[in-house]
Image (cartoon, rainbow, N blue to C red; front, side):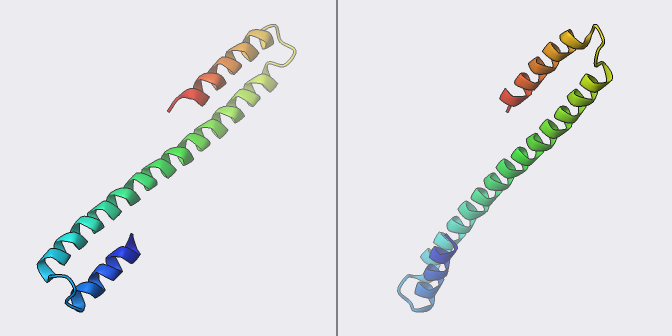
Length: 92
C-alpha cells in the first residue's frame, strides 16, 4: 500500500495524473492504510492481552491445586478449574 502511494506521488510529480485527483486518491489510500494498521494493532493487542490472562489464570489454578493437594476439596477444585479454563479459552 505504501508503495502504491509512492508511485501515485511520482505520477503526480510527472504530470501523469492531475494533482487534485491524485491528492484525493492519496488521502483515501492513507486513510485506508491507517484503518488497516489500527485493526491489526487492535487484533495483536487483543491476542497479547488474552495470552497474559491465560498465563495468569494457569498460574492461579496451579497454585490452588498445590495448596489443596491431598485435601477432600481437591477433586471438585480440579473439576472447577477445568471448567474455568475451558470457558476462558472460548471467550473472545
